[in-house]
Image (cartoon, rainbow, N blue to C red):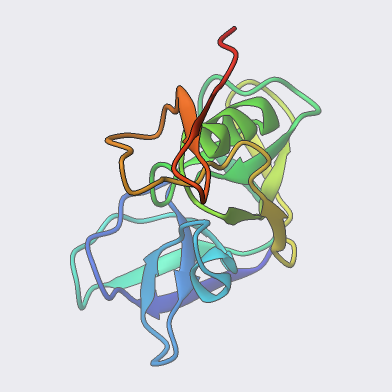
Length: 158
């Protein structure tokens, strides 16, 4: 069982997937940048900035819920510190206009409430549904494309 202690750089809750910054402070991990997606483990304690937090780096974490035994749990890109299944991660990426995000394994569910913490090196995944906005676009949903000569192409809608 690998339990490490780190000083928190922000408020941390028990069960949060956490990462270290370059100063060695603990923060809730998020999937948007390599450094913040490099999960070091799951917080065992809650505490505010400056508190000493114990982190489960490679053992069974008890206290989760809604896990499906055998499925991998990944660092969410929509909520810092949260672990989700792959389907939720992929649909979360599709909902954003980000170029991509880091897919980072937090662990594998062994029961509906227990997670075997098995962190991995984050892998950058390009967003296959990302869109580009034109000068005349007001949002992420496009109904036409403007060509260089000023004419438009109507796009099909589903």
